[in-house]
Image 1 (tube, rainbow over the protein chains, first blue to last red):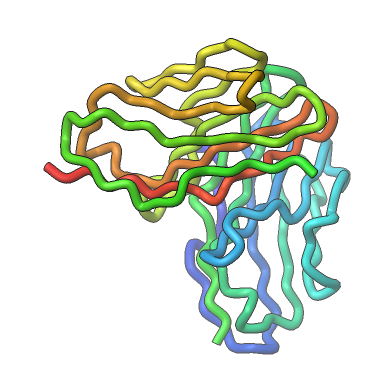
Image 2 (image 1 turned 60 degrees about the vertical axis):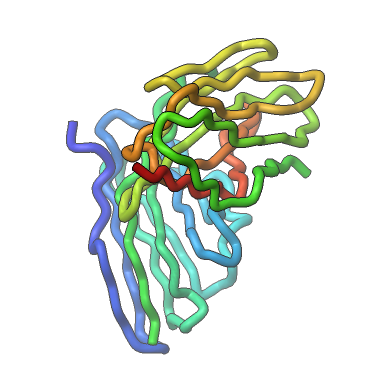
Length: 115
Length: 112
C-alpha cells in the first residue's frame, strides 16, 4: 500500500494568493482528517470526514479555509486568500472503521510558506 | 475539555540510557491512548496504543501502561538508540468523537 499521499510536499506563495493542498487517503479507509502543525500551537485538528461527509469542522480557523472530499480517494484543503500566519505543515490522515481497530495513518505533510 | 499534557523537551540521552517521557491526560470518559512518533521531515507514525485501563502497549522496545488511577500513559524504553531521536506525541481519542487530541510533543535526542 502506498500510504497516505499528499501534494505538494512544499508550497511557497505570496500573501493573498489561493493555495490548494491535496490528499489521497489509503484505499478502503472511511475517515479522513486534516491537521495543522505549528511551533506555537502544536498539532491541531482542522476538519474530519466520514464517508466523504464533513463531520466536524470546528477546528477550521476562519472562512478563508475550506475543505472538500468529492470522492473516497481525494480531498482538498483550500486557503483563499492566504496570509503569512497560515504558514505551517499541514497533514492529512486516514483511518478505517470504529472502535479499537481504528488507527490514523498520516501522510508526509505539506510545508506551506506564505510570504 | 479533554486534554493531554506531556513533559517539556528536549530530552537528551546517551545511547543505551533508560527513557521515560511523562504523559497525563484529562478526559470526561474513557479514552483510548496513543503514542505517535515523528521523525525529521516525516509525518506521524503510530508507535503504540492502549484502549482500556491497565492495558500495556508495546512496540520496538517502547512500552506504556494505561493508568486510570493516575490518568497517565508514560512512555518508557530500557535502552535507547541514536535512531530513536525524534519527536514523540501522546494522544487520546474518545469512541464518541474519533478526534485525536495531541500533547505538545517531546523531542528526544540520543547521542552516540
